[in-house]
Image (cartoon, rainbow, N blue to C red):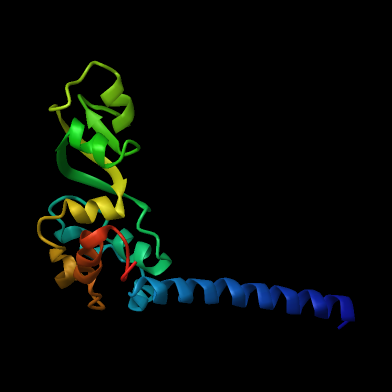
Amino acid sequence: MEPKYRRFNVALYVLATVILASIVINAFISGHPWALTCYQCKACNLRCPLGYDVSLYVEAAATNNPDLYMSASNLQLTLGEAYETDPDMIVEIDGKKMTANDAYNSNRYLSNTIVYVRRLRVKDAAKFDPLDGICDAMCPINLHITKIIRDLKEDGKFGDG
């Protein structure tokens, strides 16, 4: 192999190693390194009464990013509460999807109007989860999703952060 191709291959190998190492490091920083073993089977979604995409809890822990957005189908909040929690939250009112900010500032809806939440941050989903994640029982590899939810409920961050 020519030296320039050898250097190119080594550089790509080093880059791939750095990227994979950063994923592992972020998982350890979050305090939930086992989250890397989730293979996104979505079995946990079947048990969530709020209609959350529960695997996003695990993805957020693996990347140490509680600001990822997850979908929801059965969570209802008042418009004021949705707006105060996250103005960029996607809500549905009268069959129309919009951000909480757009709905709140449109002057067509009162702040006590009940809205369906369709997309919200993982840390906010944990805050509104009254069951602390009963979805653990559905996980085929027994990931402790409840620990992630309780960790986020404390301060919206992973670990001691």
